[in-house]
Image (cartoon, rainbow, N blue to C red):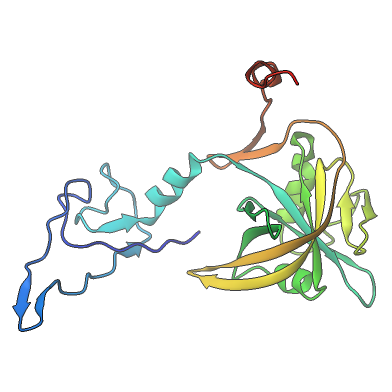
Length: 226
């Protein structure tokens, strides 16, 4: 994971009210000196989580904090346009971006060996994974070997794998890629999609996989009858 942040001045333990830098007067008015960038590092955590010097973000504590944000899990798949061999990777940084046009995005690490192969297909397929697909997710998240060994799948209209048991799939074309720290943000346009089955989604929370069951009765009560 990666982050960028900036601050306007020194703070009291990175938690208090910012102390603004001294203003300088010139013939053209008053201005503030440029704000220094917030540094990040990956060291042992501290009780305060600020690395001890009040102006750094501890890498381990950063991961722990973001781990409290539950995310869904998808499998991004593609097929080699020449030989048809399937490729894929598991992603928990998937999000919707826009309804018009229909855009979705996800992040991939610069060290991923699967993403260059998936990207080469041109069109990719996003599989929304169900809670019962933990083993399939772990298999696609592994490095090396045949990631699709023993996995059942059918081809989407673009020819990419739709995993058996997935809740939904989206065929997408890559619109843009933005380098952000140690990851790349991939923005894609949805070309085709379908819903496959009802079920609980696969959820990633605090370094572990689980599932979530929605309270549909509460939703029914909130939505007025037509």
